[in-house]
Amino acid sequence: MDPNKAREYIIGLPLLVSVRPELRLGGLVFRRTDANFKPASDVCIYWCRLPERVLPSPSYLFAQRIDPHSLMLAQSEAEFLRKCRVQFPERTLITWSPEPLAAFSAAAARCFQRDDVLSKLDGLTSLRTALWNEHFLGGGDKAPVPALERCAMLYGFKAQEKLSLKTRVEMLVYLCRTLRERNERLFDYMAGPESGRRALLQECFSKGSLAACVTADGKYGLARPFLVQDGIFSLALYAGGEITWLRHDVRDLTMIAPRGVFTPERVQKLGYDISAAEAALAAVRPPEAAPQQQSPLSSADRAFISRCRSRNSVAEIDPNCSQALKGRYFIYLGDCERDRLNQAQLKRYQDLTLRDLRYCASAYAEETARLVNRVREDSEEDGNLIALIRQYPADL
Image (tube, rainbow, N blue to C red; front, side, top):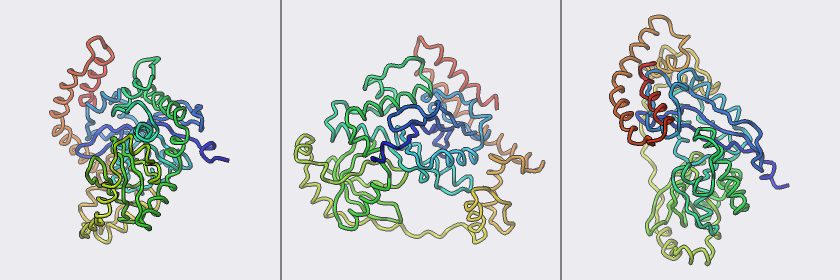
């Protein structure tokens, strides 16, 4: 039996709501389906609470049609990660692009949890990368565009209702069906287990051979992998007449395939210079190992973090831990487990929140004001959403 036919997909979007000063997720919207994209669940939203001291990006909220008030009463970041761990095992996540995925690691670090949420998945696929792959290697006549909404319309999606998070998941499902119909073999390879691509990279590294590579932003060519640490590869990609370095780990959704997919017919159609690629990649030297930096963590710090990660829950901090780690611990309690703070600590956290909000408020207001230029003249919905975004800091 083809294992892809028994596969269950999570088709969804991590909702990135902030990139500065740190990556923050506002949640995950998704639908579970069987291998033929028949729904196995309704569209679900796991909201992730933003601490009051952190303001989201108004532009990110507007682009994803998110009312920031949805983030006020949601589950904590720590609970959000635990819930994803329950949902992800033995399933394949199909999402649009790789950019938001690094936020899972950032969240795990803040919550003193293991950075293993995405590695629980059986597979992880970027639909945007898959569409580029079909365009370059499958003879597709349409080149994908960066925005999910525009790309879905380009491939024939017709919205039955106003644009919403649910509609965006339906767009993903539609594009999955479309790609499967156009090129079932390619789709099943892209949505297959990550272990197969890792084995290919390991084989290429061991033999000094090359692999085919297509990225989420539309670069393609031959690549030479180098193992930089267990399970993580650095790839030298020859694309556009030059070498580009890529990092390949569980959060990177680059397509990796045997070099044989670049058949003479495809190479001729693409105008790709195989000889130049082979010569350039043969001359590439392995990347230099990053210099070992002295860890700022004390032995007590490391023991505390290890203890927390082993249980994915935060213990009482060791009095021997450094002041820096005690500061991180205090912020974590205020953000995720406020009931563990005493009255004096709670007052200190509230003062910190007010300080941070005052610091960020003007930039938030300026970014919100610029959104007015993106409002459709005939859209009351856009105007209402911007009003909610503008009001959010005051409602905190």
